Length: 205
Ligand SMILES: [Zn+2]
View 1 (tube, helix red, strand yellow):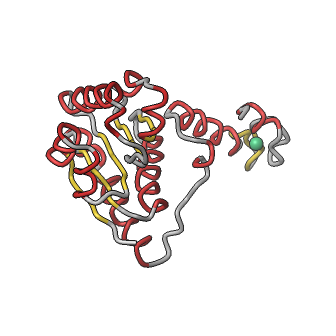
View 2: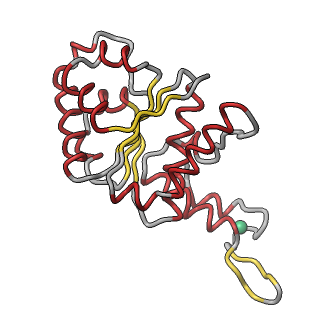
């Protein structure tokens, strides 16, 4: 997406980027949007999530809102403690919403972040890109193929998680696997690492 186009095509300010309000020229909302989108881009957040918002009306959606709000309300503390979280839910929207809403909230604070999925990590193999951001979200931490084929990738992933853990940089993970499923897929180090170092949140469907 060409971010400059947002201002150019803005119907509110006709592409000027500012509007007259009570006799003063003020920044149009399109400029704020460009700033926000630039930030989301820097976090590698997929475009489809830029304006995404989970509808928080009732049931589990409302329950997850409380979990998200709690995490954001104590964001600074969570960062300083290097608090890691694994969110377990069979509902793909709920578990992604947990990561995305927290990630987007970083815009209002002075934290950096990054979004990825396990598949993306395994395909790109760019583990070093995710070492130093203040917060790292790994969505859909699961594979539908034989994990033993990914020896190199698993090593890269383990190093990434260890580096962040040693430097107290929070990692938030979402998965549909129960703890047992997780352990049977990611035997050994990764599974042990995650369930020792992460707070586990389980959301029912
Ligand atoms: Zn505008």
